[in-house]
Image (tube, rainbow, N blue to C red; front, top):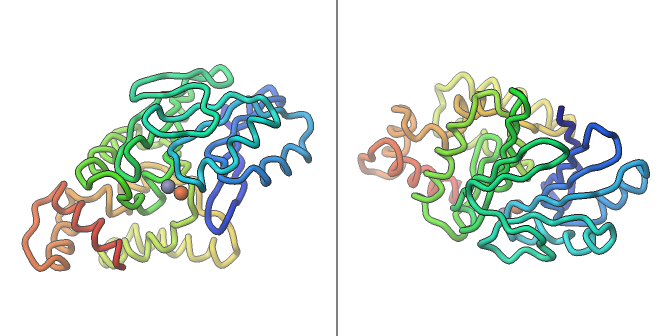
Length: 259
Ligand code: ZN
Ligand code: FE
């Protein structure tokens, strides 16, 4: 099936390695820095890097792309609408690509950046998603380029994937995200329990990823803009009554920006 390894980079990024079943090939996702990948390859000479998957153009996601491609001759996949270094294949919404015999689907998820894409793999009933800086564990990316409306509709697309989909995002933001989630929904027991688990993991300096969509739907306020409790909290914070859905989502996103 699919084996993922997380390489920490910078303060709070993860560079995901995806290992092929043949034990010889790997792909790397959003290598903001080449060094952790080169170090890993040095310790695992049986593997060669064949593909780089890029979700969006920010430096902490593409900073290592050119060096890794120059060193390995690997193929670079990335969004068509953004300037991606050394890109070989430009991807648009609905495109599919083959990786190690599996089919990956490209989902356009504008909001954090305008060209941001996610990669989804059905993986024979054990699906996974590379969500970049769009859907985080317990949160979502900031709106650097797109609108709240775009991000809301992007997240709705991801939320419609199978509930058991494992979510591999690009940052270790889970603890801060869940503290905010708890401020929005203090009565939500799923958030409380998840935050306890995450507090323990972080106290032991352990990773909180991957997540899965079922848990996100229960605990991530940005996927819960239709829930009454979230609409009420957002309305109280904004000081005016808000509708469920987009209006609530936009208010929660703005609230988080200053939390
Ligand atoms: Zn980013
Ligand atoms: Fe990032």
